[in-house]
Length: 91
Image 1: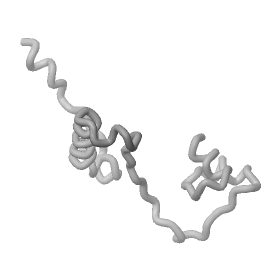
Image 2 (image 1 turned 180 degrees about the vertical axis):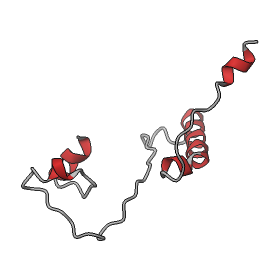
Image 3 (image 1 turned 135 degrees about the vertical axis):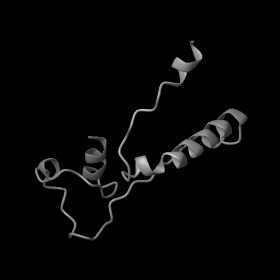
Image 4 (image 1 turned 60 degrees about the vertical axis):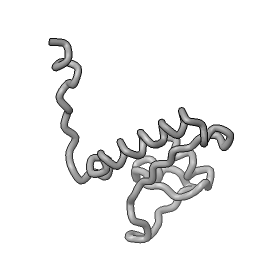
């Protein structure tokens, strides 16, 4: 619903289900093929905090994790549960 509200408020374009967007007269469809579906992931922080060690470590961790799981995030491979790492350490 957040993306729907953003599009309705003229904050940009978005991929919305027809059953939702077609009922809103202020939203119009774009011609087929005019946009390529895609998503961006943004990591944001306050400018005063972006160089702190804790925030930098978090950003570095997230960048590595997102890169490692890129195929899953982009839908190129199905999700599969990972083996429980803690089970092996409890024996």
